[in-house]
Structures are given as structure tokens and as C-alpha cells.
Image (cartoon, rainbow over all chains, first blue to last red; front, side, top):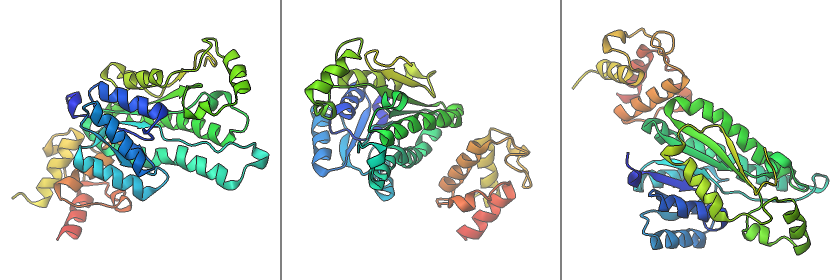
Length: 247
Length: 78
């Protein structure tokens, strides 16, 4: 199958890392569908994909909602064909130390970051196994390996996503579907721009390369993992963090 | 138009990579025809497409032999 006919689905693609991934997958020649939780987010995705001359579009998707997932996947199948590349990027944080963490702060993060992998990946597997070709990349975090104060919920989902990828990689290996994780460290996005200046200084001291990462650097790695050249990499978590954590 | 039995056997042979003459009605997908768990899921997907139907997961899990597949189609497609 030529790349021009391949469809990539990127969740959480309106800004930050997800947007960089969607843009670079588009530049690599795939038809890209990016999702956002809001209509305006979906429109923004359509706008940047169209500006890049990509035939894909933005769609509204709540990965925490079964019906939303099933209807969006059905719409993509109908309009573009089954996605053979899936980047599970959508994620949220609800930070709190565990002694103060509310049940919904725990369960919202588990539902959006981890349970969504079950929903969205499962919905895409039929197309990939049939095509005898597929790529699933979960965007995790250095926090899944290192831990981080106030992020027990988030860290649990990111470590969970990596175990999920290893198991699924074994299930789908015979169909040439690879399943991997990309674990970014601190990347210059809206999420990290909210950090107070003092925290930022401390953080930079822990990063051998002495700077935050660029979203485009994550996009490049994910695009490689989704290419034919990466066909022999599966079940792997690739860290990209400026040396702050060396696996 | 081929009979349901012929159509089912043809799909089983294609999906599991075996010769059509090896696909007896009594054959079990896993024990006789060498299917693994993913093969059986894909087989059901192929049957769904051939017969333009949707087979619910709880029914699909019970379809373990060629005969059971033929029975399911006969009972649900008439």
C-alpha cells in the first residue's frame, strides 16, 4: 500500500506535542486525522492540515467516551479508510499528592490516559490486522519511569501504557503490527510553560542538554516509528528527554 | 450461487492458509486446522464480511468448528 493511501489517527492533536506529531506525519505523506475534545480544536486541526495540503481533517473526540470513540472511528473508516497508524497522544494531568487526591482526580486521569488505550486501539485493530501492517505509538512520559511528586495518577497511567504496549506487541507481531511508546521528558509546550521560573531553573539543572525539548523533536521520533524503516522495533519504550533519565 | 457450506469452507481455507479439501465440516479451527486465537478472530471478521452480518463477540467465541460456523450462518441469515 502506498503511503498516500495510509491514514494516521493522532489523538489530542490541536496543540503541543500532538500537533507536532500530526504535522510531521502529514509531511511524511500520510493522510492525517487529528482529534480534539472541542469543536474549535478540531477546526484548528483541519486548518493546519489543509494549509499543509493534507487531505485529512480534525474531528471532535472524547477518548474517555465509548460512543464517541466508536462513532469517530466509523466516520474515519467511511471517509478515508481504516487508520493503519495510531498515535495515542491525548492525555490529561490532575496533579495532587496522594493524601489529598480526590477520587475523580484519580479516575479522570486513568480513564483518559489509560482506559482510552483500550477503547481507541481496539477500535483500530481490525483494519491493521487485515492490512497485515500497522503502527501504534503511545505517548507516555519520563514520569512513568522516574515518578514525580503529585503525579501518582499520571505516572500510573504512563507506566501502564508501556506494559500495555509490550503485551499488545506480542499479540500482533504475527500481523506485522508494531506497538511502541515514546516517553518525552520536559518539552516546551503550554503544559510546561505554566511552571514557575524557580522550578524551571531547577529542572534545567537536571537535564544534561540544558534545555527543554522541542515538540518537533518528539514528532520526528514518532514519525520514524510509524515508517517502514522502523518495522523491526516493537514493544519498546524510547526515551527522549535530553539525558535527564537514561533508561 | 454456492451453498453456505461451500462459502464457509472457502473462507476458512483462505483465512487459515489450508487447502479446501482439508476443511471438513467437523474440523476444529484450532485443533485440526492450526489456527491461533488471532486467526479465529480474523476468521469471524471474514465471515461477517462474506455474509454481510455482524456476529457479536459472545456468539463468535462459540464458533470453534466449521460446522458451528455453518450452523450460525444458517440460523441467523435465513
